[in-house]
Amino acid sequence: MKTHALKPPDFMTKDMRRTILKIRILVRIKSSSTYPYALIKEFENGHAAAFFGSTIKNDIYNILGSLEKSGYIKAVVRSSDNGKKYYVITKKGSSTVASIGKAFKFMMGYANNLLK
Image (cartoon, rainbow, N blue to C red; front, side):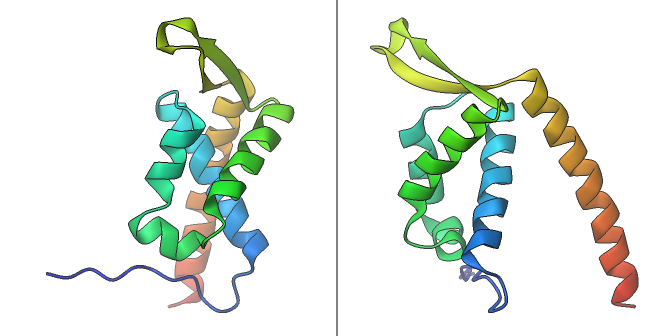
């Protein structure tokens, strides 16, 4: 069975897609620490690439910087991995992911009621 890439609706702006990518990156880092190149490889192929667009590499680096500056994640250099910079979630980031999850559940219920 062939799957088709999900393309964003016409009304969805680049800023909206970046916000979704920012949330997705934060959730991904919460599940396990990672480094920028691994995120790029994860998101530049398949469905994510079609949804987020061709500037995903730059967007990921910008989002990581923004999340770090805001205190949601922090960089940790691992000497055991040739000094590679990994990103880990902070306490603030973890509580934000929990809040986002609650907000999405509420909004999905609201949207579901609108569509009835």
